[in-house]
Image (cartoon, rainbow, N blue to C red; front, top):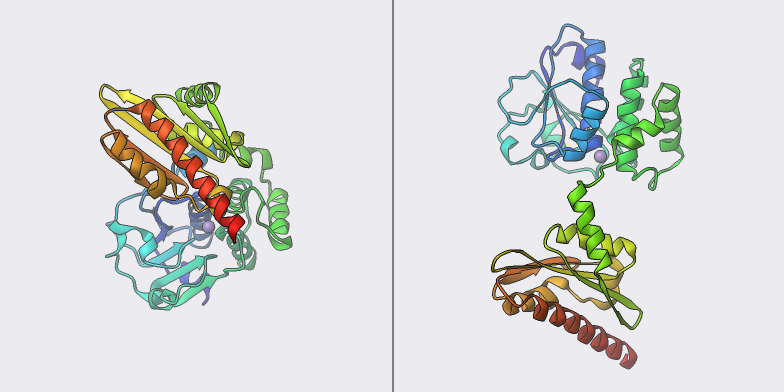
Length: 333
Ligand SMILES: [Mn+2]
């Protein structure tokens, strides 16, 4: 594919990312729109995604990006550019009917190759060995000999920081691209800052209260923490896990005749004990609180109307019994 020719011949490209667009998707979209404008200053592009994540909105505000990102379909276009995704499905439910002409579609992505990609685009740059779409874009800017200004450098570095979890996942090539972006004027500290989300004050207070009132139960090597607060239970559970609990269970009365339970466990706890918070704990608790419970192995909850304290005691009891059964069966085997 000749990317320069495709872009030079398009007057109305539509640039899209995956649904609930994360910073890698949104930053690569904005960077691509600047690349397009450098090649074809007379054209007018549109940016569109099915929902922007809260964090991505924060990044756009932080770097004062003024481009409008449409969140509903309906724009006319003569070229479709799909970034950070390689399937129609990932564009989101509202965008499944978007007309796609493979000869007028470009896909640039780093996810596992999708066999369907050939059916939507003749022009693909899919590099599943890369950690982010933003770093692929750095190579494209260079290949097309287009300057990366400090704003684009900030956006691209922020997308890379997000997808690599601040370079937790990385390799020589990605680090070298990071250094390039710093040389182009990216401000590392600002990029990190743009990605930091501090919970609201009330949420932080709820987490602190849950921690200060927590009861700690020790079953074998496992640490189980329970507490009572009436708001932000899920967030407070995550807080207790971050502090060192293997399992956190929080109950609350968010209103009259309302009882709510929330729970989280570490992956290690589930891998070792196979105790499923949804089926083993929250489903039976749902009955006790006269409501319903369920969820996933590591994250589950229940909603009901009564018996909060009984339910919390029962939760601890269920986990204790399950841990013991598990320990005995390991001894036998
Ligand atoms: Mn990505």
